Length: 236
Image 1 (cartoon, rainbow, N blue to C red):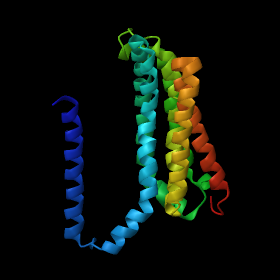
Image 2 (image 1 turned 90 degrees about the vertical axis):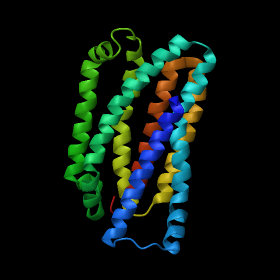
Image 3 (image 1 turned 90 degrees about the horizontal axis):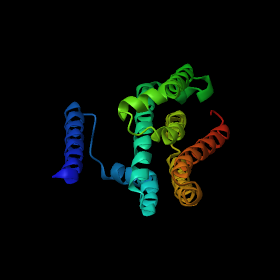
């Protein structure tokens, strides 16, 4: 079934997980179906859902624009660099997921800057990214069998996101606790629009490097907006 089979597999696995959780909660008696709660949940989460949809599709804009250059070999090298950077970003995101329960405990009662877990989390992220930069040449050499050395330039730019995106996710926990869902949705939406605009502008003059820079700048803007919003909170 090819790509259709892959997507179908993801859908089926997610459906199984959802049903398992549903019946587990039902047996434990911790869940009671309420249309009022469903409507309230949909109303609260709709802005975030719409923004998240654009936030998840915007990263594909670079490929859609770059393929118009009709340079498949160059696009292939760029995609290799992007994929390698994605490995590092995924590793750092996994670190965030490991710390996430602690963040919900810490951020509920204290500012983020006073959380020891947050400081340890940031240090681990910096170590992972630093190790990548130290061994990036070797990593690219091994992963691509020496065939795509030029992708190193793109991966070294894109991997900067690995220092930014997990921190954004961590800070967002504070806003989730304070029920600032719409603020998160707005920042995600704004960041996605900035990314789309930068990809169009920078790829016209800097091509693949411009596309990589667009991702980093967009992530930095989202981080800055979150930090500004956080400083305006009394218990940020």
